[in-house]
Image 1 (cartoon, rainbow, N blue to C red):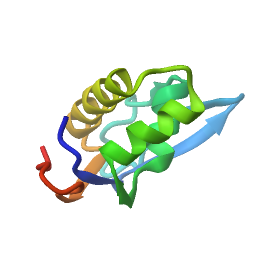
Image 2: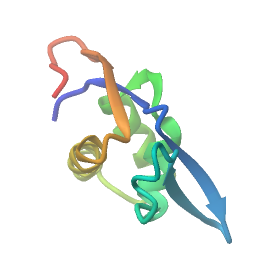
Image 3: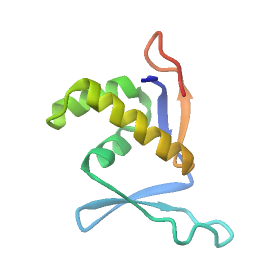
Image 4: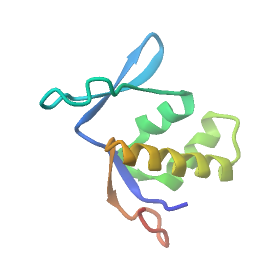
Length: 104
């Protein structure tokens, strides 16, 4: 897993609604009006850690302390989520992260 440092994109905000985290795009020119994304608990945890300071390796490690998950599984879930969030334009890579790893 690449340990890139990621931050939430300015064009999408996270909001808690009824105990659930949803991602809502900030509308520009009326586009993306139907693009609201619901995150499960682990994805919401990762989203909240994307501060532009922590890399994915550190976030995966934090997941093991918060959820009953092994590090390898947490790393795989982080990598998969980043691919999804990246395809939505919801995250921006701001650095390479842990020494020896590359940002995707």
